[in-house]
Amino acid sequence: MTTPVLYDYWRSSASYRVRITLNLKDIAYQAVTIDLQTQQHVGVEHKARNPQGFVPALDIDGRMMTQSLAIIEYLDSRNPAPALLPADPAEAARLRAIAYAIAMEIHPICNPSVVAHHAAAFDGSNDDRKIWMQHFIDKGLRAVEALADHPASGRFLHGDSPGLADIVLVPQLYNARRWEVSLDDMPRLTAIDAVCRDLPAFAAAAPEAVNNAPS
Ligand SMILES: N[C@@H](CCC(=O)N[C@@H](CS)C(=O)NCC(=O)O)C(=O)O
Image 1: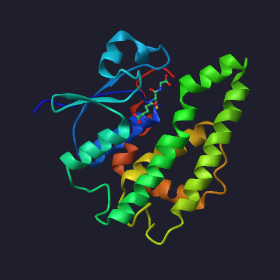
Image 2: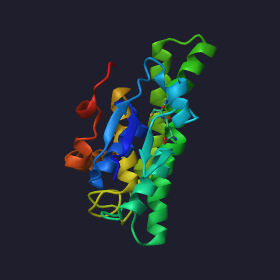
Image 3: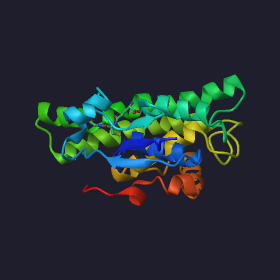
């Protein structure tokens, strides 16, 4: 079987989600850096992989896949153990809701191209970028902290094994720290994040573990 190739960037949280999943599923892969700093992601070569001009893209099983959540669910069907969603449909929906609250509400408005557009339109400085990031990450994570307050939450967002929602949470908390968002009011999320980051699959996927490109 051909080794899957992950086109990613070390500090990209969407890429970080896919790296965690590949590691949890014990799928060996080759990583190819697409440097967001030098705009490689919007070059012709990468847009042939992902017409959206985003990382990640995963070349697997003869297909080029995009969108981290779609990739994660594909990997979960392809390699069912360990399962990333609980069997109970209502609880699976709760975990998808948490993952979507981060991936669809917080993440897109904090994308570099969105923030750069805002800065250009309003003549913003780096300080403006930080205020923007802190505002949206804080607002979004406060809601996720409330969603985590649930009887089915345990050491992880569901019970005692990591799943879809944890895979999306940990990269978002990395981003929160990067932009110096206070996490003092998010004890549930920070406790789950600490447990996850201790696991080898999460540790090996972390930006600091894979950084092979200039910042
Ligand atoms: N919804 C997409 C988001 C992908 C995405 O936004 N990737 C970011 C890095 S985390 C990116 O490539 N940004 C480039 C840009 O904003 O120009 C996914 O989950 O894969």
